[in-house]
Structure formats: structure tokens, C-alpha cells
Length: 117
Image 1 (tube, one colour):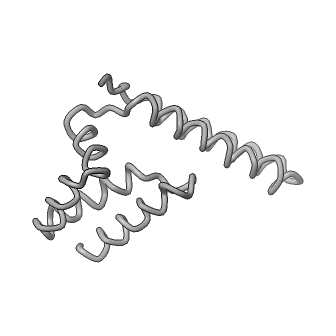
Image 2 (cartoon, helix red, strand yellow):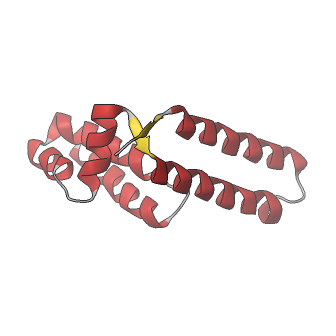
């Protein structure tokens, strides 16, 4: 579980720079895996100055800050919109599926409470 948690953490860090990789869910997965396999890594992640706040907020409040929601939804629509217009422009059914995917992701993100700081 330590290895899978480490891979999840590495993907979460990459997700900061690559919009299609979801940072927070991958951090939550890493935390869950490390909770069961390594107290040292779990405590490091929970107390990390940058990443720990995401996990603590979600664990305690089941909510996402407004700024993060706006950024996430914007990036989803920019990246999937680009794919719809430029990558699969000849396949209407693929465009429809991608639009449905973007809508589902948006709904999922917006379904969480907004964290009020």
C-alpha cells in the first residue's frame, strides 16, 4: 500500500500542473493508503504545509473552497472543450460523450459544500 500511495501522491503533484489529473482525490487516496500502511508518511502528508490543508478540509468539512471549485470547473471545461473542438471534431458521438463527461465532473465538484473560510 505504501507504493500505491506513493504513486497516487506523485500523480496528485503532477495534477497541480496537468489539469486532467485531479489533485485532491489523489491526495485523499494517498492519505487513505498511507493511513493503513505507514504512520510516518500519513502524518507527513496530513501535516504538510501545502497538501495537508486539502485533506484536513475535506475530512473535517466535506467541502471544497470556492476558489478551488472555480479553478477545477474552469480547467475541466477548457481541457475537455479543447478536445471536443480540436481533437475529436469529426466524431459527433465522441464530442457528445466528452460534453457529458465534463457535465458529470462539474456536477460532482459543485455537489460538495463550499468551504467558507
